[in-house]
Image (cartoon, rainbow, N blue to C red):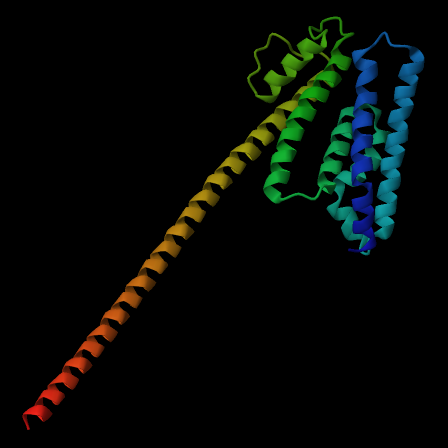
Length: 252
């Protein structure tokens, strides 16, 4: 294990905790618009501080990497964590990229990781997409997404591409979030479908391999039975010949 792997292993749990804290700090001012201004200010500063820690983690990992350009090319989410805080309208993307970055650092089996990604992505986009659209639409004069319940219902119907139309965004930011949720829903549906198909294919291949092994064992047993029958026949023939020779000697 090199220095980069040791660093990632040691910081995995702290980064996950920081991502959860950031999610809470992001959601608090939106869900509680009447909260104490000091609490809102603390939440904003908590966001900035956590992003500074993520940026520091990226710098340390880049310094520990033996091939830095390859590290930058293979770690786009890590770079997004550093750059997205500069774009204030994309706070939701900052949160999503942070959560996916933490998931990328987890060491799990491929099937478990894929399932975790899909479930985590659905829950994250559903929850924080609702919060983001509520922030964008709450003050819109023509908006009809006024509560977190409305926002959750709208996010669910949007991600599943059902789109009842009883709630819809009217602002530019809200519609941009809607496009992101629709594309994410289609992509996640494709991942789920591919995962299910891969599972069935793997099971079919396992069954086929087991049938092939059973057939090979059966053929091997048949060969052994034929060999045993041949040996028994040879022994029987030899014994018959021995008895015949003994009988001839007795008659002589």
